[in-house]
Amino acid sequence: MAVGTEEQITQWKKEKTVGIIGLGDMGLLYAEKFSEAGWNVVACDREELYDTLKDKYANSKFTLVQDGHRVSRISDFIIYSVEAANIEKIVALYGPSSKVNAIVGGQTSCKRPEVSAFERLLPSDTKIITVHSLHGPKINTEGQPLVIIDHRSNDNGYSLSLVDSILSCLKSKQVYLTCDEHDKITADTQAVTHAAFLSMGSAWAKSEIYPWDTKDNKWYGGIENVKINISLRIYSNKWHVYAGLAITNPQAHQQILQYATSVTELFTLFIDHKKEELTERILKAKEFVFGNHTGLLLLDDSLLEGFSLSEKGRNSKSCVPNSHLSLLAIVDSWFQLGINPYDHMICSTPLFRIFLGVSEYLFLTPGLLDKTIDAAIDDKAFRSIDLEFVVAARKWSSIVSFESFDLYQKQFEVVQKFFEPMFPTATKIGNDMIKTILAHSKK
Image 1 (cartoon, rainbow, N blue to C red):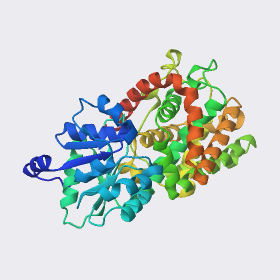
Image 2 (cartoon, rainbow, N blue to C red):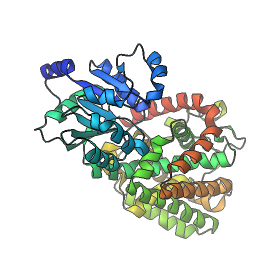
Image 3 (cartoon, rainbow, N blue to C red):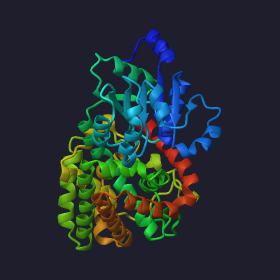
Image 4 (spheres, helix red, strand yellow):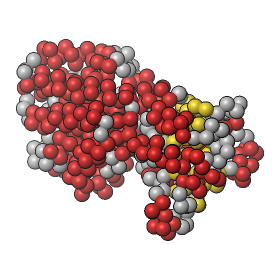
């Protein structure tokens, strides 16, 4: 971290202006954090929203202006916090107004298209230092990974020092990468994680099931609480947060396709009762991913049992053995792709750490994997929902391969509407669960 001296930062706060173009959840988080830390912040959202937003943010410490031209002309560090699908269009519109020698960055989750737009559409005198906070807007920024990419500065570290100084108020764990390194890591850690939870939600919605409220106790227990809470957490957010990473990152396409393939092939072994072949495949994946694992598990079931969305499900263990197709498939897909998930822990999101934790728990808790394989082959209690999960995983893979933001939005919002009544409760319980998990993982 190349933070300036205390005297230098004090001077910068008097002289420099930070600009935020786009006041969605993450743009607003940055605007509020930076201005509360004493930086002069100007921000805008869509021009037609100005009259509404000026009243909403009248008492904020940052200054709301009408459009990105007004942000760009006066800002020394400009952050585009816009949807990945719109980054090129917005940079083309406001980029030419960038202040001479301004530093420009963005918050999209796939950096190659963003940086390519900057290279083509920004004035040549601008510096390009872009960022990505690897967490959602509802997560405490302290200690979370924050990727910084110094793509074009060439001023002996001055611009990077300024950016580091501005970002330091987030108290995040700063990681310095190239565009390609960032996109590979985010594909490895986020693409499949999101696909799994999106597919879970789609399967439940298609079956018209609220899994926390079934009479047969199928989805009781700590692992089930994670699946339900994280899936609902994703669907309570905006669709473009996940669409951008999946669609604009070519490496994510490969991961999501492999996940759908693993889901399909494992389920085929289930219904063909090929227990020996299934066991051999799962154990090979276990050895590849967890063969060198030592020490404590990231999570344990008892830690998670109290986070059910239903009163009767809290601190109750599942009465029905689960095939855990979603978790078997994630480990199998890591194996098939040659990905070691532990290699990227320094840049891992909270959701990825949780998904890795429950997968680890399933594969490394004595006897649990054997029970899961037995259930997958012999118990039909989850067969129908597993089938819906296969269909959902393949559908999400197809949408991503078509690179269709419209289809992604439509599929996402259909499921979102089904679960919408539970979002307030799910958000509160999910936040508590994540806080507990993250605190536990630091021990």
